[in-house]
Structures are given as structure tokens and as C-alpha cells.
Amino acid sequence: MDHSADVPGNIQNDVMTVSAALSAGSLREVVLIAGKDPLVEIGGGHSAYVRAHGRAALRAGFVPQIFCVSDREGVFETDFGVVYRVKSLVPLHLRAGIGSGYYMPLVVIHGPQLATAISRFLRYRPGPHVVHGFGPWAYAGLAVRERLARRGVAAATIAGVYTTVRHESRARVEGLGPSHGLGKKARILAKHFWMTRVVERLERRTLAETQLLLVNYESVRALLPPARRDPPICRLVPYTSESSFFRDGTETPPCPTSLERPDHTDVPTIVSVSRHDPRKGVDVLIHALAILKGMGVPFRACLVGGGTLLEDHRRLARRLGICDVATVEGFVEDVWPYLRHADVFVLPSLEEGSGSLALIEALQAGAAVVASRCDGIPEDVEDGESALLVPPGDREALANALARLLGDLALRTSLSRGARQAFERKFGADGFSRALAAAYRSAAPGDAS
Image (tube, one colour):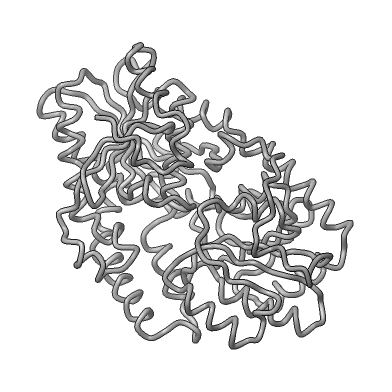
């Protein structure tokens, strides 16, 4: 079934790539359990991570069959795999009541739905199969393996782990501040209770029973149960951003309108790309920008990204009086123009779980980086060489680092060069593809070549 006309334009580059390869019999299938719909969540985060894996798998000689939950059913051929939408059993008004992040809390319902759909898809196809789930969605892979085993079909389960439920949910609660409304705080606290009391149980079983765990950072490996941290159960693999598959990093698109302020023509530009989520520290950055303005440092700033706290942070920017030098842009479909026209990229996160896809894109763009020293970030960049690292949550330290960088063109140039070198050294698409292929072949029972 071809519904490629419904696929957003920035994804539908060559929808015939997968079907042609399948028809020729030149590729082997791998099932990816995305959970969230990668055709709807166009920005960064979980879905961008899944799409990058799809592109890597395809480049390595596999056909990604990607299963997700959505508002309606459908099969979509894309240039990162074939997407199978499973219609949610939960009515739309109930999902809306949970909020924009409803997918993860509802994994207890949607996981079995996906397992049923995947089992039906695979049951008459010869194995062995490779089933790769991401985050808590890997739980559905265990059910697939058990159902296929009853039919005598072999399947290997892989879990891509980029954080744990407790680590991420606790950081979201700890990141709540005075600028965040009571209603949103109550909702986040309720979600924390559900995630740590219900979803975490599924995660524990997944981490205990999945045959292969893939992590990208030593900081994530440290979050795993001790018995599951070492090879051959746990494998450290490189990864990269989705943009690295179709950009070489030298393209410079037109400057976004919001950055073309005539009164700021020769002033350095600060760009941040982040969801407005308590664990991302956007409010810390806004306070740091206010301090920076009070210090008399010339700059203009643009904060790109959507999220539940977007309006709270816009109000905070107005209250602190920085709207003349800073724009809280909100969601944009393509962040690349902002990164390429940035003099400085800021990642103010309180927690990342692993690393940051936005940071990787900023490194590829060659921006001078200021980032929080949290989770896997110090594994990606080196303080003073490819970034300036500051303690997470410290607005004064963040403001001082920005002031230092804005006032020193030589340092910005050096960090920009170091950023690009770090990207080329650690985040190549080919290296990621080879590592993923090796993981799939090692996990599959029988001959997976």
C-alpha cells in the first residue's frame, strides 16, 4: 500500500528506494519498534533517533520495517524505511488529556498493540528475525519473540537504550521552577508517578530479558543493572544525527527571518535548539541571557523548539525584559538554517539521558558550543577544545561562559573548528551504519548474513 503522498516533503526524498530493493531481493528486513509516529514528530528527539537508525540500517543493507502508533492506520514508504501505523485503541480526547507526551505513558496499552501487529506481519515470513525496539517500546519486542517462538519462528530482540524511565522522569520533576505553571507542574508530577510505578516495571523486564542492549554512551551503560552492562549483552555503538545522512555540513541556506534584525547586524548570534521541557534547562538559559544583557554584552539570541513549557518561557523572557535581544521562536521544521547562521550554540540541559542530537547537528554545522556538563555530553565534546562546558543549572556560569565566548572571536573560531573535527571523528554516518549492521548480525539467531 503506497500512501507516499501523505508523507511530509522533507522526508519523502526517494520513496521508491525501499520497495525497489525489496523487489530485487537485495536487502534483508529488520523490524524497528518506534512507538511514536516518525512521520508526525518531525523535529528532534526520539523520532529523529529512530529515523537515523532506519537510514543507517538501509545504508548497511537492511530494510527497516518501522512500527508505530498513530491516529490512523496506514503503510508508508519513505527513504528511511517502510512505516506501519497502528491505530491507537485510546480515544483521542483521552490522549489529549494526558498531553503531548502521551505516547510513553501509554506504552502499557500501545506496546501490546504493536506486538500484535508485528507478530502478524512476521508470522508467515521465514526467520530468523531481528526486532529492534527503542526505549520502553522495546518491551513490545519481548512479546513478539514469545509469540513467534510458539509458532517455531526465531526472533532476536534488541533494545536501543538512551536513558532509563526513572533517570529521565526524575530530571523532569527536578527541572520544574517558579516560572512553570501549577497546572503543568501537577501534570508532570502525575506523569512521573505513572512512569516510575507502571512503565518502569516494563522497562525492568525489558532490560533483564532482551538479548542485546545497544547504548551510545558509557553514561547510559552506568544506568543499566550491573549484570547487564558488559559484552556480549551490552554493546557500545556510535550513532549520529539524521541530517548527517543527507548533508555534508557545508550547505549554508538563507538566514531565517527571525535572525535578520537590522539593528543587530554585526552582533554575535546565539542559537539554542531544545524542547521546552523541564529537564532541558531552557529557563536557566533565559535567566542567563538576562544576566548577559545586564553585563552590557552585545548579542542577539534565538531559542528554537516546541514543547509544553513554550508559553511559560515566553512569559519569562518578557518578564525579564530580554525580548529586544532574544526571540523564543518555538517549533521550526528545519533547524539547519539556524545552526548554520549561529555564532554560538547553547545546550543548557539539566539532563540528556545520553547525548543530544541537536548538539551533534551543531557540531556538524561548525558552531562554537557552550553546553552543560551532564550525562553523555562530555563524551561528545572536550572542554576548551570543541566546546565550553558548564555545570547544569548554573545560570551564572552559563552567562559567564557566553560572555567569554561572545567577546573572543579567536576562541569562537577555535571552538568552531574543534566542533567540526569532533563531528567528523565521532559521528560519521558510515561508521554508525557499519556498527549497527554488525550488531544486527551478531544478535540474529542462525545465519543473519
